[in-house]
Amino acid sequence: MKQIESYQHKKILVLGLAKSGVTAAALLHKLGAFVTVNDKKPLSENPEAQGLLEQGIKVICGEHPTELLDEGFELIVKNPGIPYFNPMIEGAIEKGIPVITEVELAFEISEAPFIGITGTNGKTTTTTLVYEMLNQGKKQPLIAGNIGTVASGVAQTATKENTIVIELSSFQLMGINSFNPKIAIITNLYDAHLDYHGTRREYIDAKANITKNQTELEYLIINADQEETWDIARHSKATIIPFSTKRELAEGAYIQDGWIMFNHERVMAIKEIALPGVHNLENILSAVAAAKLSGVENSSIQEVLRTFTGVRHRLQYVTDVNGRRFYNDSKATNSLATINALAAFDTPTILLAGGLDRGNEFDELIPYLKNVKALITFGETAPKIERIGALAGIKIINRVDNVEKAVPEAYRYSESGDIILLSPACASWDQYKSFEVRGDIFIEAVHMLK
Image (cartoon, rainbow, N blue to C red; front, side, top):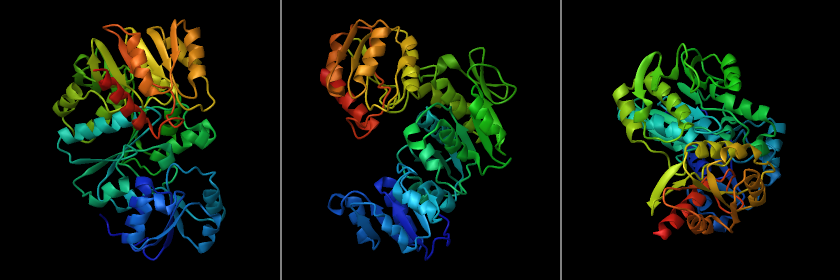
């Protein structure tokens, strides 16, 4: 860890806790800052805040009082989930107080270079693939970011021999100043989080921040099949490495005659890859590009791709119950992710879908429901999903209270050889704290069938 002095004696407000806020507050305290933590959860229900209090850090809990901004803070480190239209953030910007996320802190203290992965879908799978390929190639990677390990915590123990492979959300990328990954990946870009960003343009601009500090000495790996990623590339100073699942390229990663190719070199035959789903070829191509740029041998890449079957909650195979194969795709929080999941199978499928209603419809799913023999819905969007199920001609459409009840209901309509797929097409927050909780409940309910 670099012993930087730029935060020493600075008055800094950490807004919002969770894992990233706790880690950032403790780190800033260690770096000599005068830290105040503000979290909405009451202190009596907030063990994280209590722990920081014991370290001698000032803690204000129970509300976000805007008058705090009058106390002369020089910087705010905010939880990524707090939107910029929050009164505290709006007030800080009006007062000229810089606002960052803890990813910026991680970069500033890290001795290790970064490989940063962002995009709408496939971030976690790609991040995990890159990490596994580097690990197999003995490159000493560390994994961090939106995947569950706090970047500023990982960076404290990283050395020059490591590489930090980090998954980055648009929320995190809006709060960077100097962050500059050695290799950046943009997997794809579709409508997402518009309730946070307001417009698609603002969402795309947030994603583009991953390359804003790159030079020709760094690499930007982009999806060559999307015009918006090319637009980002045109404004980047990085060396551009494209990947495509649809056409052969003059350079970069692509598919040719059933092979994964990188710069005209055969890396691996597609038929040997264990990870299911055509959509995962995007993730594989971008990960292969990052691994090759990092000096990983083909043999290490091949070993990972022969054995890697997916990330938990991302088209995760759960088990077989009397010939029915169960898949947990709880991370499918938008229609595109569910389309990709449905496209991965060509056998009769029982689809479990529904969740938070963000105001959108689901008509784009209709062409991909041809193999769905039964539709089990739950959550706020159940009526909307039932509507498109009826339009697609699905004869069995049943609504249940929750995911736990959906599992035995799906089994009731299934036969040996069927797929039973949880792929909600919606966020989980109407009923569950996170998509991980929703997926875990699905897995538990599946095992209860046995």
